[in-house]
Amino acid sequence: MPYVFDLDRLGRDAEGLRTRFATAMPYPHAVIDDFLDPQHAAELARVFPRPDDAVAWEQFQVETVEKKLASAREERFPPALRRAIHDLNAGPFLTFLERMTAIEHLLPDPHLTGGGIHLSRRGDHLGIHADFNWHPGLEAHRRLNLLVYLTPEWRPEYAGELELWDTSGARRECSIAPLFNRAVIFATRSDTFHGHPNPWSAPEGVYRQSIALYYYTSTRPPSELRAAHSTLYKGHNA
Image: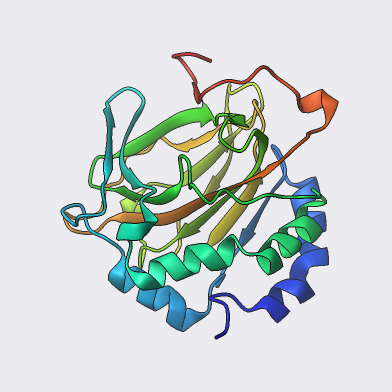
């Protein structure tokens, strides 16, 4: 059975993406359009759980920080979604990530801590933040985020763009539209501030849908080492 992505295409693109990733501002990142096989992407959008589905949604409802739904309970996911997550945590995909990012010895997170699937309803948002940097269950450093957007026919009036801010968290440097079947891969450090502060503004019943996966290493460069911390939100604990 083929992967949900075209492994040959990713292999061909890895070196070019490596340069883009390394030189991107305000910190290393890459945007990959048409990321998944089109048929798989369409199926994932079709089966993506809705707010009332029994997938053990966690409710994040702090108005000044974040409002969204999230679930890491893969045993409750539709089979197509579970398969996609397994493929994106498999060895061949990690090898692609290592080639693209020059980060060696990447580890997936089978627990999907903080990740899995995310859904934003009308009015939901995510404040500018830097992610937690240490996974105590894996005893590993968080190094990469992968976001795969699965809202068909996104429009600018829906908002919800991913914003990358400078490493002081003072200003927006880059805005990335959550286009259908677009992937964003970016470095995760204690100063890689990002979020989607502009609330999701699509009509009721149209949701900002994404897969969120994170990758780790047992060590990290000394210049990036910080004491273990939870998510750092600008204006709150950062």
